[in-house]
Length: 268
Image 1 (tube, rainbow, N blue to C red):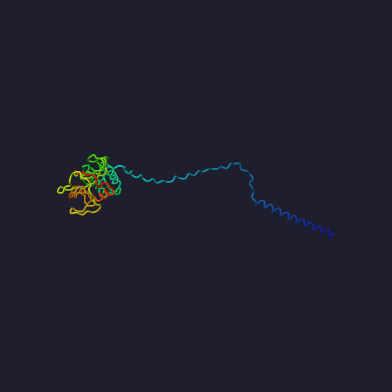
Image 2: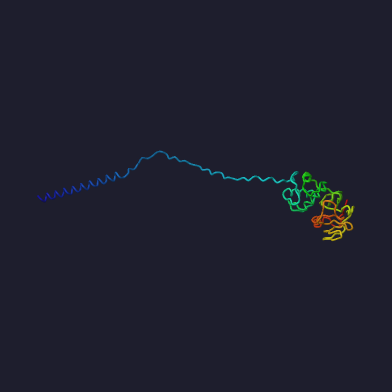
């Protein structure tokens, strides 16, 4: 009997423990379920909107330099007076115009040196202009407005030289066409240059010192009279009777064999 009661008590205790354990499990499960967030299983049907943005790069900034002033291709008929030691485009245009018309010069393009001054003086003498040796207003206009080449004093065949004692220029021509015009200074009134037609008879390729002075590379046409180089060639007749030219001019004549021995020379 006691044994049966003990068994019952044991069974009851085991059942109570089981129930207590089950309760604890159920409470833990409920607590876990309430702590876990509920997942939203609803599917959205709203379409996603896509926006495309086009970015345009700004145009590069370009700095445009002002256009340079056009370079003249012909000598302007008006402008400033140009003289020895002037430089620039107008000097170059003047030199082109002078050489086109037959007036010899040898300066660098755009530089108004002594050779350009004598070439310009020869043009002024030939055209009957004031012999300033400068590109003054009158000279500029005449030089710029006309293009005609210088013409010889007479019509002849072959190579020949003419010395215009009135205009104080020497003209070298061939077959009635002017090759070059040079600035010269002939004999002054007290020691005039002989007039007439002669030929180059002899020449000295160097310095000749005489009682009348120094003659550079003279070419004699009669007696002791010659064409020769000199450091002084004024705009008027001033020599002792010879025909003075600049040293640059006579050097060119020699180097180009422009007036060889036998060339006829007329002085008038």
